[in-house]
Amino acid sequence: MSVKQSEPEKVSLICRLLRQSPPGEFGQVVQDLYALVKDDELVRQEAAYVGAHHNKKNFTPVQVNGSTVLLTHYNDLGGNRFFYPQDKFSFEFDHLSGITSKTHLHSVMLDEEELWRGALHKGLNTYVNCHFPAGNCCVFKKSLGKRQMFVACIEAHEYQPLKHWNSLWKSDWTFALTPIMTRVTGVFLLQLHYFKEANLHVNIRKSVSESLHVIDRNQFVSDFVKFMKTEDDKIHTAILQNIQALSEDMWRKDLRRKLPITRTFMNWNELLKNYHQNTNVSSKEV
Image (cartoon, rainbow, N blue to C red; front, side):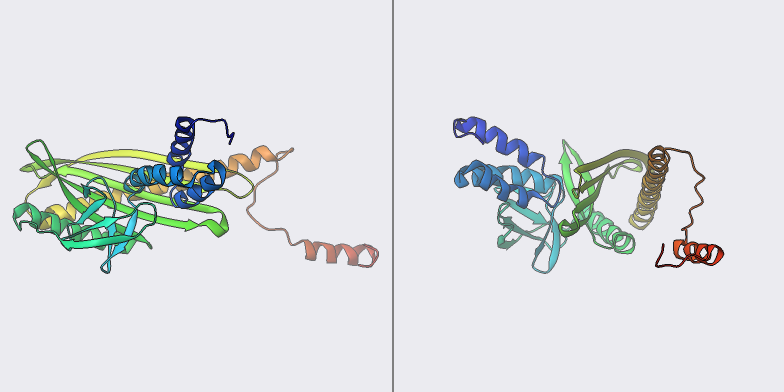
């Protein structure tokens, strides 16, 4: 970076690079900016601000009192405090250091809506534990005018920086518990970054929507989880099919001559051995 750049220009550059940070790589980008900008205080200031948005956008999981809590816009109390509705506590989180502190009890009225939220969380947690090897989830309540909405959040990531790739899968499902029928809207997001001998970013986003009956808690939780699983399966299958099609297309284009694809390996050692026997040529000569 040029030393002639003004502070606003530096701030613009810092924020732009931090906002582009793939999931799991925010801290590394901050370290790189320390070396690039040569102004640690300015980098820390902007990183703390942008880091809050980065963590909430990506449903970053943190460990607090033995529980895994997702940082989202839905449980943000302001002032870097977050609320975990399942165990009824709040805490402060330093977005730059990743340290939690000042954990306090957070009282919640045990009304009908909270009973619904607890039942939804239990059903969602069972589903995530069965289908995501490293998944986390939570259900939150939020007010939209006079309507009480529920948001179910799922996060699953695999960060492998030593193998030069990181990935994040997340989804959120929003609905209101209106009588008889409710409209459930889900949004999926898959982010993948591969950075060995290339810089490949993959972003897949999809929205789905469906009307579900609302009769009682057990019925709705069961129907909701079934709907979620069906849509999860659809998008997983579509991604795998697209990857397979892309791989085969690239394979065909890379060949100068069109060759049959048999999906079998050639045993070159056996072929060479037979060739030697048929031609009486020694291995040393070859």
